[in-house]
Length: 122
Length: 106
Image (cartoon, rainbow over all chains, first blue to last red; front, side, top):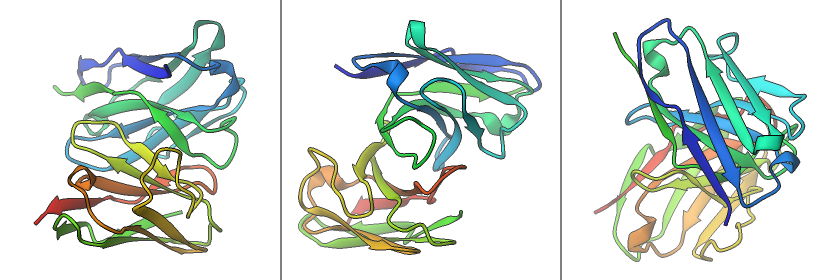
């Protein structure tokens, strides 16, 4: 059974850091690109970042570029999102999602986790 | 690439036919995906590329379009179809979604 399970969310103050994790099972993790997508309360979907199957290629959304870092450990079937210099507007549910392919082009997301809530508040 | 959906919300009844449109700010061929998100749940991939249903998606859903103009049609609404729908361009990075269309029960 294919699963993606996010963890690491919580309440943090502006300017601080937080690291999210996404543990996957049920498929060969190292063969797929994986994404982070977020959704602010009551708002639409915003793409955050992608990492290619081998970890060598990464792309970021403009709103997080230079602050967030996506990484992966294929030996542990785990995806990460290091979030630095957090802002109030980063408050959202953060989903990890599998790409249908290598994560280097033509992105589409066929399996999603249930999300982890990050709240940035003073 | 900016993605613009319309309408932002629509009210309809069970059995109705509904069409949602999505426009890209530049041509993307057929590199378009549609997602359904039920309240409190993660999005679900319905269609990719523009007119190909994913496995297990009911045939009452259909997609069409190419270039800049796309549409998602539900031919006969069922109770479980009342949700929010998003388009997403799959032409490249950064990935962009439409703002969503909320489908509500009339």
